[in-house]
Length: 56
View 1 (tube, rainbow, N blue to C red):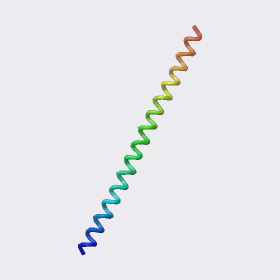
View 2: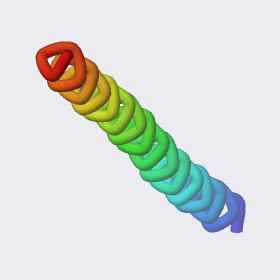
View 3: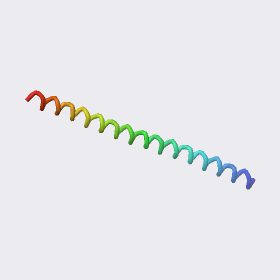
View 4: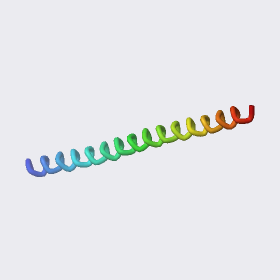
């Protein structure tokens, strides 16, 4: 009975670890996508400014 309780706790801990790991991986990917989006927006903004300056 004690071993069953320990095994249940171990499984619950493993499930919690896997879920938290998935969450933090998702959060990290979200931050990477956000940085990429900001960088791409900055590049596009720079290209627009460069095109405007060449027109004048």
